[in-house]
Every structure is written in C-alpha cells, then in structure tokens.
Image 1 (cartoon, rainbow, N blue to C red):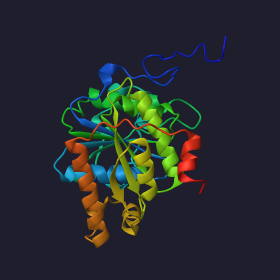
Image 2 (cartoon, one colour):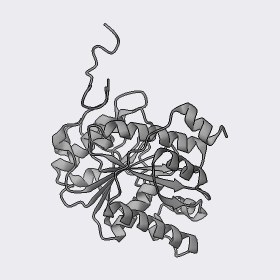
Image 3 (tube, helix red, strand yellow):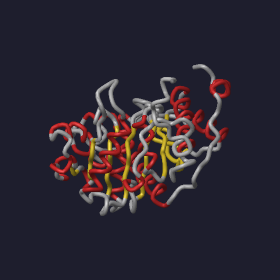
Image 4 (cartoon, one colour):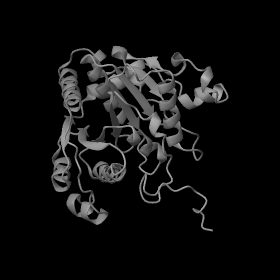
Length: 298
C-alpha cells in the first residue's frame, strides 16, 4: 500500500488526486456576492480586503469579511484590534458550537462590516480547509448570511494548503493582489492555475488582479496581455496606506489628504466594478521556464 492509499481522493470532484477538504454542498453561501482575495504572503491582501469591504459598506452594501489566516489580522483595521479566531473560540467550548452566540465570533467593524477571523490550526497540524468550513457552518447556523450582500474571504498566501482552496468552493469571483515585480507575478501565475483547476467543478471564476504598492504596472500588464488576464485596479505605493494600518484604521476613516482621497476613489471604483459583475476570465497560466523568459530573473 502506498502512503496515499488510505487517504480519500476527490478525483473527479475537486481535481485529479485531490486530498483537500471538500465542503458539504448544503453549506455553500447563497444569496450574497462572494469574493476571495488571493496573493503571495505580505503583498497586502488584508489591507486590500478591508478597504474593499469599507468601500462596499460606503456603497450601502451589507458586508461580511472572513479572515482565513492563522495571523488573524485580516479585520484589524476594520475593528481597531486583533479579533479572536473561530478555532480558538470553538476550543474554549470544547468544540460544542451549539454553545456559541453570534457575538462570540462576529465583531462589527467600520461602516457596519461584520468581521470574522477563522484562524487556523497550529503550525504543522490540521487543515485550514476544515477551519473555513466550520466558520461558514457557524455563520449559516446563526443565520448570519441571510442579510448579507457581499462576503469577502481574505485568504492565506499558501497555494498548496486546503485553507487556500476552501473559499473557492463558495466564491463567485477570485481577485489576485500582486505587485509589479517577478516574485509577485510568479505567485499570481500559480494562483491562476489553482483557481482554474477549481473552476472545473465550482462556480468560481477569476475577476482580475490589483497592482498593489506599485508605482508602475508595466510588468503586470505585460504578463496579463500574455496570458489573457485583466488588471482591474492600481494602488500606488502611498505612504498613507502604510500609516492607516499603523493607526488601525481603513483609509475611509483617515483624514482627507490628497493620496488618501485618491486611494479611496480607486477602492470604490474597484468595488463598483466587482458589484456590477466582471467577465469570467480563463487565462492560460505560463510554464515556469516561459515566465522566467518573459519577466527575467531580477
């Protein structure tokens, strides 16, 4: 018997040979528009997600943001502090979810955004997909999704983890945060391949990418033109964005400086683009050798 023979494969359901957690179809989110935000670690996914949530809230939408990273800092700028994780709260009640109330794991942030930190298992143990699944299950059991217009999953950067894939089982569109450099675009290429694999069995499609913390967008645009992808927003490397995080605030709470006003408008424009619906993209990810040839080795 091979080491994998005793692991249930989801062949034909979730990709060839997949052993990732497969969610109960009855637990899928319905009614709301669901977006998953991806990108390599440290690229600014949480900043993007939180400001995007704030932009949707400013548009009058009822928003729920779910952080899917053990760091549990996704909703930090929306609430002004780190929130406890669903997995830690469940541990406190010996994994008896019936003992929990919505206020135990959901916090209201700026603009009325409902904030949840799914968290994750300790390093080297468990599956992040299980944590995401339990979080959505709790939200459904407490009817927290029935009055929601937009759900944003802020997803950890590890492409191979089940925690990466689980939100794709709920999402309508996946958004990738990148920068105008080789490492970020290389990670984006891998994420595109992963989302494309899941789109064979789930409704999720790619919406496009955000060039974040980037003065220029030439490399991002060159890659997008090559594979058939779209850049739907550009967030320059404004120091105001860094300062907003230090002050535990979204840009929508910061003073009306020129850069802040400009960045807010871009987030609102992006929210409007996503709300109005984006073309379902099916880019063709590049082989490693080809992407090195296109973008170089710097």
